[in-house]
Image (cartoon, rainbow, N blue to C red; front, top):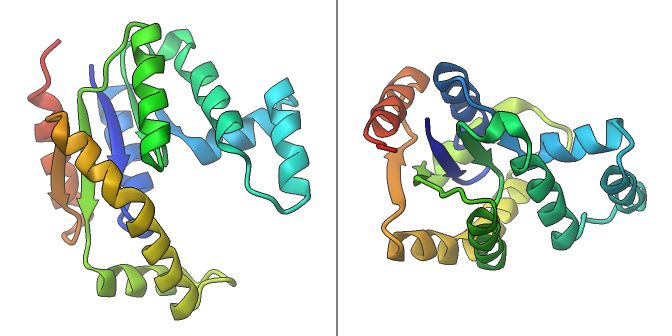
Length: 187
């Protein structure tokens, strides 16, 4: 049983590692992107609201994302644990998440920060070959990530929750370290 938050810049391997670890630990991998797509596909009230923003090419507002996360963490299959990926993205969301977890009587065990040098991230993201990914766009995304997330790293470090993991290794090496971290969690 583990409750983890995965942080890391675009291209650090959060989704890949979260998927693998969630499967091994038999807990849900909760990605805010997946929650959004699921809510839209199921045409839930929150999903319909989110769809209206997405149809206009706008970002889905924080409050709506927060409501979706609250909904997801309230479901029975997440009681045994979870891995949150892509949330929180800023300190305000982290504070909200703290309050939400208190409300539903859960705690986050560890916040895993996957660290990968920018040059490696740029190369990884360019190799994905997405239409909108050129070096300038990627470097801008990394800059935005650093501006929003650096305070988040300090936020969790101050609460003795942060564990930094070198993400610039093979998928297997990173995953082995993540498994060790989860084994060290006692409930």
